[in-house]
Length: 430
Image 1: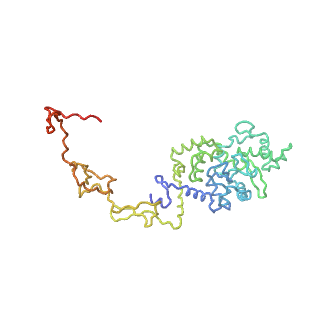
Image 2: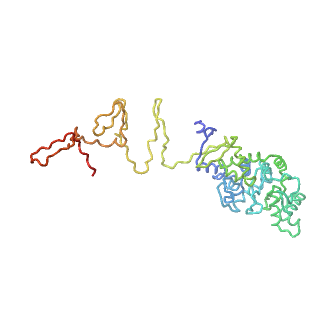
Image 3: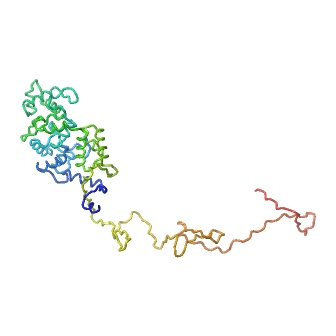
C-alpha cells in the first residue's frame, strides 16, 4: 500500500487526502489553466469529450461552483473577467466543432451573454442525450406548443415552422421572411425560447454571421436516445462526469452545477443513492465533506518547499528488533523561550534495585507503615530538604494543676491541703 501511494496509485482503503492548495493546483492542471492552453480543435475536442459538460465562459457571481470553462481552456489561464476579444478564439473553435457535429452550444440559464448567440454551456454530442432526457421535450417530432410545460410564444412557433421549411437562417433573414413589421431583436427573443427547450441552436460562421438550425437536423440519434432514457440514469451519468472534472466537490457544488437541468432535491436523492451504493466516496478537505468517484481519485503533486528549509522527515535508527524514530539533525527553533530541560532530573518513583522510594515521614512519626509503598509527589521532587530539628518534641506533657483547699484563717506558712475526692475544676469558656 505504501508503494502504491508513492507511485500515485490510490486504493479504496487508503485514499490520499490533499490540502486545499493541492486541490486547486490539480484543478488548474486538469482545466488547462496552468499555462497549457488548447489552441487547436484536435486538442480541444478530446478534453471536451472527457469533461462532457463545461461552461463556455466564467460566471463566478451567477454560478459560484468549481467548473471548467471553454474560454479559459483555450487561453490557458484563469480569466474571471474575459472580454469579447478573449472569447473570440474559443467561439471560433466551437463553431468548427458544431459544424462537424461533435459539440453543441446550450442556453440553460436563460441569461443573455455578451452577444445574443453566446452560449452558457457547451456539451459533447455523446453527452447531449442525458441533457435532453432532463431538459428536452419528448414530443420533439411535433411543433412547439403555446401551452403546457414546454410552452413558447406564438412568434416562436412561427419561427420554428419557418426553420423547418426553409432550413438554417439568420435572425435578420427570419425577420424579413416573417414580415408584419417584426424586428431582429424580437426574432432573437423567439429563438432564445426555442434554444432553451433544445429545439434550435446557433452555428457561428467564418464570416462572423450566425445561422440558426433545428436540433433534429443533426442530432436526431441523440435526441431519440434521450427521449427513451430515464432521469435517474441521466443524473447519475452527469454527476459522475462533473465529479471527474472537478476532482473533488461538495454535495452543494454538485446540486448547483446541475440545477439548470433538474431540481436540487432530485439531484440530492441521486447523490445519496450513489453514496449508499459506494459508487461515490467521501473525504474531508479543510473541514469540508467532499465527494469523488470511487477509484478515480488522481495523484496530487506535492507542494514545493521553501528554499533553505531542511527535511525533517523521521527516520528509523537501531539494528535490533526495537527501533526508534530519529528526526533530522537540524530542528526548527521552538516558538518563545522554552525552559531548558534539566539533564540531571530523574523521575523514577520506583526502582527495582533499591526498592520503593519512601516519602518523608510526618511530624512526630519517624516510621512508615510497613508493607505500604509510597511515592514522591511531583511538587516535592526538586524541593530542598528541611534542616533537622535540634530540639525534639517533649515526650510527656506537663500535668494539669489539681484542686487545692487553702485555709485562709491559718498563718502564711500554712500548706494547701487536698480535698478528699476532689475533681479538677472544669475551665470556663472565655
